[in-house]
Length: 293
Image (cartoon, rainbow, N blue to C red; front, side, top):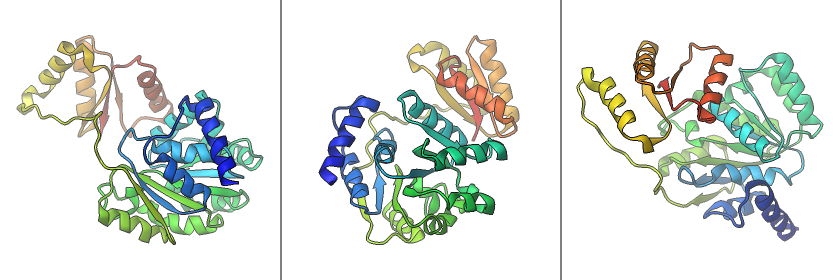
């Protein structure tokens, strides 16, 4: 049975994602899922963590729930899945209650195999009641370090996930992160109450990333950024983080004055405006997004 599922997954891997084989760590983690083993996965950024739950979701009975901390990330993931012919959706604060109900009905009918949910949604009892009517085969937790107070990005709403897992029938759990010290890994297992869990870790090397520091006085920062963008065309697109909304607006104005296609993104914008910015950036129509951190 497992071997047949593996062959089916390799076919789907090629059909939907265009790959002939798995990357390091992916196959072992997927094997654990097929064998109903809870797993903590630590793969570097760009290592293909999302595929570990997206691919099995296509052959597992019922739905795969994916917990994600960022609205923009959910939309990006869903858009990417739809582009390769995989029905997926998300439920978070950016959609209306009526739209939430509509999406839940489509999940129940089996139309959506993958549903991204914000962890705060588990505070909503009405939503939880509806969720209980859905067969959940896999519970995936993205950015799992958020559950640990030892992690760099602790998020209190992640603490409720242990109860949410039980509430939906204790399906197989896969917790994924690119950033987890031994203390954080142990805490993830503890906070989720994972029984007989396995660890898949491939290391932290990220050849696609590099760090650099450019010393600049406060008055020279904007000038340095403009100089960097106008003299290094190979940089492509990117995101600049600033501390305040006013600083974001100021920087976008300065970049635009130098013919750099820049847009602003912060929590004070409505959902429609934020979606517009994300679409501009993903389509390459905006070179730079200036966002509050």
